[in-house]
Image 1 (cartoon, helix red, strand yellow):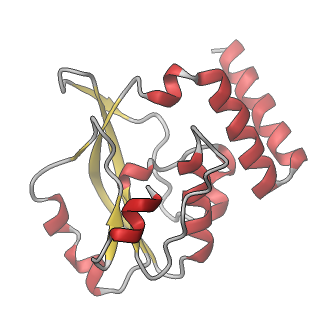
Image 2 (image 1 turned 120 degrees about the horizontal axis):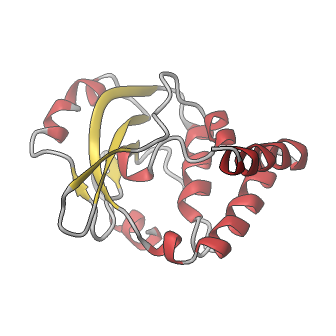
Length: 170
């Protein structure tokens, strides 16, 4: 990711991982009005797909109407595959995180952003079952460290207790 950032020459960066895709051929064209507003961040929704590209539905977590770095206190509210960032503000990925660097990257990006635009569109197709899902236990540990660093221990503990209760009492 950092190598890609160092080689990027456009005004915006958009990370689409292996297996993921831009939602429709017209998606980028539909975002032009936000670029003309000099948005630091343009974000939208994500649809899950399986390996055969069959649509599985929208993510359970919906993008908030007003997205800030504090939005991530409740988890990954917007997939990084559905976030475009002005190269003027984009940070590097923190390489100490092997699985959840994208979460830390988005939080740091959002802390730098002044103009944030909700496109109110589906921007990407996300292939389920990726690396973080395959290494879920390690991912949870990294996620906890990132959340604690950015939101404090108490708030992070409370959020994780909430997740456990929600899981138990479905």
